Image (tube, rainbow, N blue to C red; front, side, top):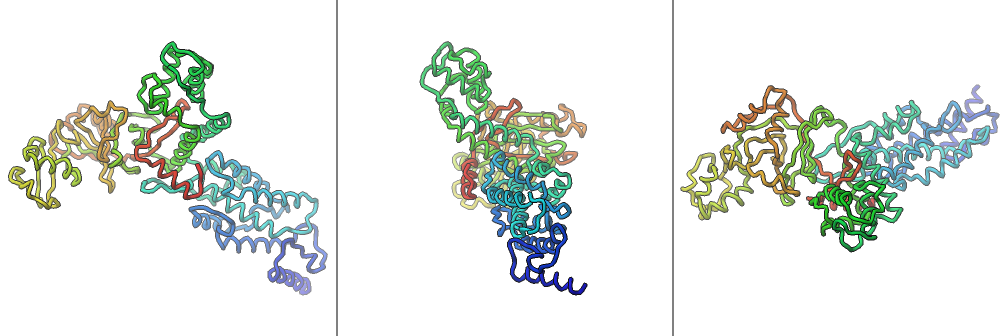
Length: 561
């Protein structure tokens, strides 16, 4: 017994001292081994895997902005049985390794590149190991190949899953979520269920909009392969006009679903063509005239590559949305300049809104609305006071009186006519408040508060004209709502408020705070493209140039959209 133990120990020490690419106890000791893989070789393989994993993801050629997280995932995943992709009992490679490779081959569907996950190298190793284990009996265990394949496959798969879940970049100055998911546990459970696809599905953004954008991306790639968008030739597109240029227009409109596919060769402008043009214009936030005007023509001239880039940028933004938005919530898509209030999956209230102008953008953030203020006093921000109050008071101080503005210096109320508006140089001690009068107060009759360090909120306005405009980016950052009565009632109905009660509170002339029964999440997002309920792509203007900025982030990350 002691002799056998000494021989085995010698073999193990030789392994540790010299290493090997193909391991066989028999070749080192001359001993007669039982049929099958030697357990000592398996111990060496397990030891090697643990040592390699301890070095982190970098030696596994993992390139990911969340490399530290992947290091942690590897440690946790290999904490128990160290050999994951080789079945010790059956002495065969784990067939689930094939499923992992198959899922990684699907990376382009998510707008990701298989080159980022060493897929070619993994497939070559896979082919070699498949050939090796195809033999009836394996006398020589390819330890180094198994060790490399096992750890690299896991590390690169975690990198792929991390990119599916979080994306290749993190948005600058956006206060959004980083979804949480224990990928190590998810992968372990998926392996137990023999369902690798499940861990990928669990990593994907749960919002149906993400899958819809994936489908649109695939659709646009096919259009690109077929030559891209049909060229819009010169010619008249007035009703009754006909020709080859109209047929090209019909083809373009049918490709995007604005015109029935059966009419994709129509060469005469009729009511159906005109309605299809209007549909295209509405989807692109253009004036729905039904005419091919200059802006419509310019939009149609945009190449398919730009549309593909737009889809990829916005598909990525779904990765920054929360797993669960809540039982009820408010969603304002800033480029859409539109608000929807949801209870469950039902849209209870929806309306146009006015958002911040490009110089004072509405921030992208997710916060909880806590309370409503009826008949609000407006505490004028210093920047607005400088441009809108002090500037005009220097010309005529009476503008303060007619605007229902009160002036305070060091907390003391001042007579605006007693202030030396032209001679005063230090305005830091001054504060301005506008009384709650519906016909002048900039906040109108109600404001909706979701505390944040930007001091941004939603509010009513006495200036209703902007809501009818096609572009509504006019505010200093806050969000003006078109139907404050409807939104207030929807938020307070569970507290017994009627619409009449809401109107009464709004017109009381005295400030009143009303807490919501429970916080309501507010999502201020920035989607310049999304797929609507009909399956068509809605495009919106890049108001704040975030598309351009994030494209540059992708380029710096080595990603070409």
